[in-house]
Amino acid sequence: MRFCKYLTGVGLEELESVKLLWFDSKGLWLRYKPFGSHPLDTRMGFPQPVMDEKALVSTLTMLGQVTWENERK
Image (cartoon, rainbow, N blue to C red; front, side, top):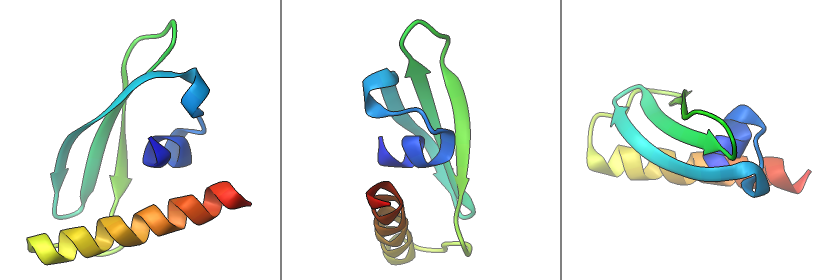
């Protein structure tokens, strides 16, 4: 949910659903559905390609921290 808000500006109270569709070495795809709207897709690119599970977990943790700090502003 936090990644979706960071990417789209659509807040939690405006969202009916969000789900992770896919990820690859360069980023991930989210599908989100605002209330009263059609589902929309968005992509979050990674700062650098990830080549294994450890790098993916580390990158997602870092992006989670960045998005959390962005919400706090």
